[in-house]
Length: 74
Image (cartoon, rainbow, N blue to C red; front, side, top):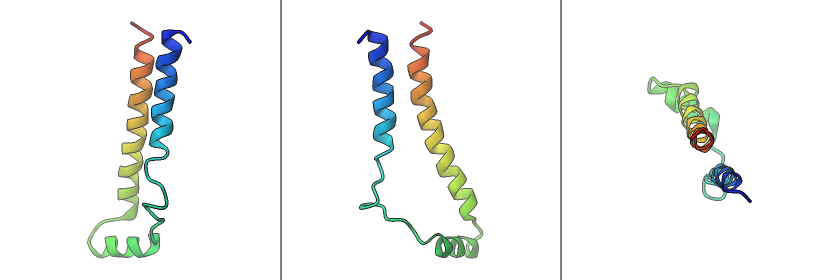
């Protein structure tokens, strides 16, 4: 593979690795209804936390892509 293809492949491997970072054996599915109730009782929402987590993940994957794509512009 060319150096460029290798860089892009490494970025994809990094994203694939992220996809396996939180296995169900270690992080089982939570009781979302119960979590929503507990959060609501303390002035928070599950939506706000879910949005924060999703944004964090997407920004991280976006950074991997941006870094890989920016090397092609140099």
